[in-house]
Length: 238
Image (tube, rainbow, N blue to C red):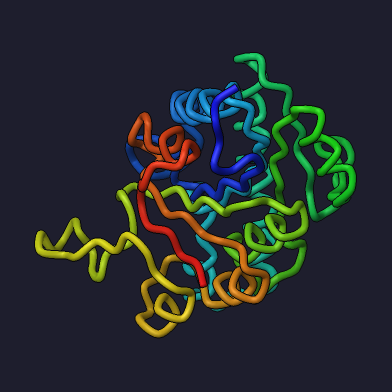
């Protein structure tokens, strides 16, 4: 077993991580690519929980712009996260990783109900746990769900997977002079409005002293190197 900086992690993925070239839907090739990255750290001995968004299937903002009730739009998004969770579960199990999906909205035919102690037991038994349906409540994002679940399962770090190699002071895709931060405080993130995660999620992490590591999941070795203690991405702490 490798020497690990973090033994139990929660990995936060955007729904777009599963999308195809057009940015929409579920691409089995993308699900398989993510599963392979998860497997690389799983075999290191890391206990892994995952929260995934729904932006590849449903963008509530579009519904709200047409007058949709926000609670309805949010519940639709929660259901979409369960679809993504099932797709990722399938990809993981096809490469030999035993996986459980737990849903905050009860749907026993496709997922276990979320039970904190059961989730922790799965992790202890070397199963990957994917949390679906957000917090089960409207008006909360999957960022907040990730922070909440990470705290509940006593994860040592919340890893926010993005398509850039950390947090910048502006969009590095639009501004070649954007400055990357190696380390930030929770208050810095909130005051600078850096959009690492939403304010509720950042506040939860701050109140519970849960570090957030932002890194590029599409760098084939970034996650492994970060878990071994290398300075990868941007670390948000007190």
